[in-house]
Length: 81
Image 1 (cartoon, rainbow, N blue to C red):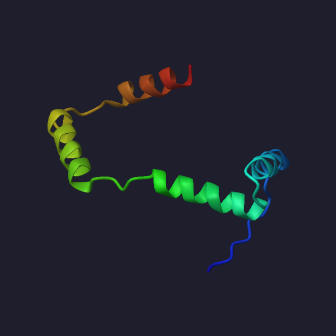
Image 2 (cartoon, rainbow, N blue to C red; image 1 turned 90 degrees about the horizontal axis):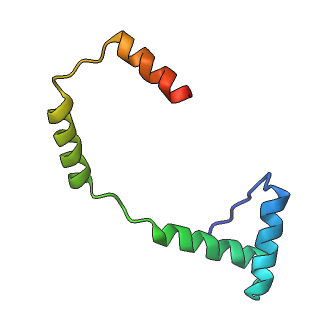
């Protein structure tokens, strides 16, 4: 098995993991492994064919449009408000 060293864990997060570990009757190490397992198993790989298909559809809808410098500047300003 691999060994990982995690540095600079904020005290607040470590304290929460300690409390969670105690509630689950596990060591902090076992609790962290459990958390990793939950996160890794939740993620499903992206369907690359679907992603590429959607990207092509968007490109077809917007490929003819050329944004002007004026529009880009306006969008930037709007995003900062």
